[in-house]
Length: 584
Image (cartoon, rainbow, N blue to C red; front, side, top):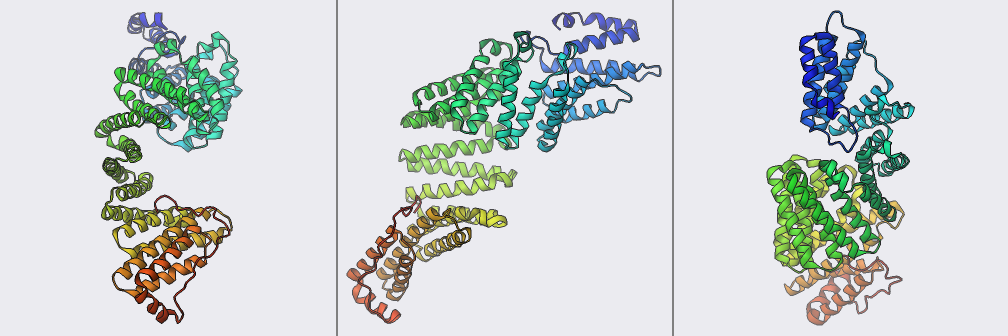
């Protein structure tokens, strides 16, 4: 290919001097320049290959549209259009690639070899994948794989792709459809093929091998198959070596960043936190190198690597190092979001969430709230553009912000955030409420705590009572223990709310209202085995008699016709699952 590229002026001159044979010679030369060659020969830039493809298509079109055109000329035009579609995919112009492929199919009476048909199916799958038409891409990828399985490759067809590349595309599409196990199976088949290849065969699919091994590692990590991921990841690291970085840095360096991050997670999961930190630092260093060469590609990957390093530092109990990494990730993602908010606002929000968690763990409540507020703002912007994907995240982060404000002592702000989160959750879960019982109840419980701390005891009791009703009904209808823990936590929260309401009424001289709250607390105690609920009930009744006996005892007698209880504790059959949950 290199020599043909240098000699291109000669066939161009021949095309001007002898239109028919000269054009055919020029078209063949241009097509030869487009075809991939030995991997260690650095390919020309995509924009130059696109220019050659467009020139070749124009040459073949001029031949095929003549009145005395040969059948071979139409075959060459169809093949030239396929190569033009290939080069359009290299520069990310997927819609145009689909249009060009449609034109290739429309060439009248063009004959397609099995290898050319398989390449066409492969390119169509890649274009549909790039356009997020995943169902169409899956069908094309399946056809492509089957076409390459039937193909008996020849030396001449070598430039038209092969089964390893087709399997890799098929695996990518399956992964995007969240069919991870099937995706990993396709990657494993592809990895087996390339492992069995000779050195000569590998010279033409070396980049496919690097991609497959790195992406297979990521899939195994997603499936929590960490030991296997470590083994494959070390093999991937060997394939993505310095030689491959030099040959195709724009492809291999991003793969190395993701690979090192995946290996760090595997090492952490398999009990080697020190090696995990070292590998995460390698991911950061690789990403910084990439930023220096290609900022657009490198900065998002640097955010990913910094997040991985921060996780490893947290595991090693290094809060200062974690905070530094989190802050840098936030600064980078904020810059990216300022340039492309539609793409990077969700990334910024995630980084801010994790920074808020870092501040909260360090007891820096004010900084945690500020980070949480910025995360909410980023999710609001993202939800305006993509409500279906981002509104559930907005509801979640609003609830987290409510908890952060409660830690800081801002009860009023906490109530506002929790109310909005609950309202958003109700709207989002209404079409399929049974699938979200636990989520709705948990958020009602957090709102109840915020209301209790703000002094709105009646509303707090109402929230917790609704949460209990939702979970009790769900538990009864499911017939399983799926809601046991959530129900126990909710009843503990309801006991706290009723106790607080009773005390507030007694302090305000409202003995009858206090008795109503105490009766509800006693009824709750009778229907649960929760030790914390029973203990709260005992304390509430004991304190009420000791501190406000002159008012509460007559009020109880008036309301019930009975004496004020002297024993309300019900021995618990079990204490499992009745510990108060976070947020109560």
